[in-house]
Image (tube, rainbow, N blue to C red):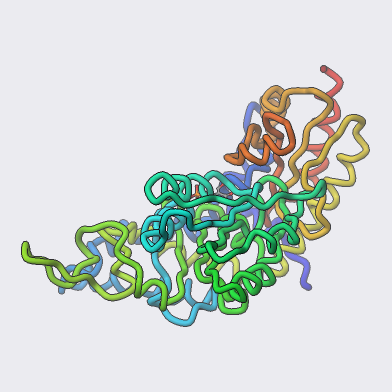
Length: 405
Ligand code: PLP
């Protein structure tokens, strides 16, 4: 493992040098969205100023160039996640759209009484699309619980499979607890029961190396904006055998082969699932975010983030009344906590006055909050550009603010 030159990395992120409320910004809301390095911003600017033309439509040079950039991005994503082919890489608006696509399209085959296994730690994006399907199809949702450390109860997971189970869908990493779920083992169990699996990789892809073939995931979804890339785009990986069988999710341009009022035929993969003009500017710029991650190596990034998280956790535990939610030995990215009965919103607001950006609330995981019997938490989350000095600022400000209550 190599140690990273964090100051050099920070120079790529001008926003990190700004002040907030007269104090240097300490950005600890990376699980919500990470900041974007200049190489990505420059690529967006370049694409707007040099190659803007609609993709897959024109014979003219600009359109060819824009198409080449987008399709190069698809190849780069394929390599990044080790998918077998570019046909398995669908560009979406983000994790949420990826899950909605699978629920709506793959879900077409489900019948009343069929069962889907989710977990109590899911983000709303991996709950509500299945609930919409529940209304429409009469499927049942079964939910895996966690232990006090915030790890999934794997015995219960295994016990929920029966001959009506048609799908399992769970997070790679919890956005609240940071727990890294044993996805490979969970997928292997589901496959032994003949059940396909979707993995919500929104919090996995920014911190862990992703190998969809090693996981043997049927679907893996993630968002660019949480991994140093542009906002508004994401990826749905799906095994070709499923994508080929699945009906289109939306209709329109790009996704057709031939349209007539007597019947329409659809484009081949991956375009069948990419109706309308894609966000080709940002898709092309996403390559620069993948370059960024590759340059510093996801293993080095993960090890730096883990060191920050462990250091901060240790210091936080010295604070009387501190409760940390998510203490699994195998965790990454985030620390969710409460102090005594201080409302998370109050503490979050005061931390902001000291320049520290943290997230407060239910983190789009209300069933998990209900499980803990709390309305919300404060969440500090880390990225490669964060420093130990920032952790100290956060801890010192936290200690000082707590004395006000
Ligand atoms: N799933 C998890 C675990 C998340 O943390 C998030 C975002 O916070 C999402 C899904 C939704 O991602 P997006 O809003 O980028 O679609």
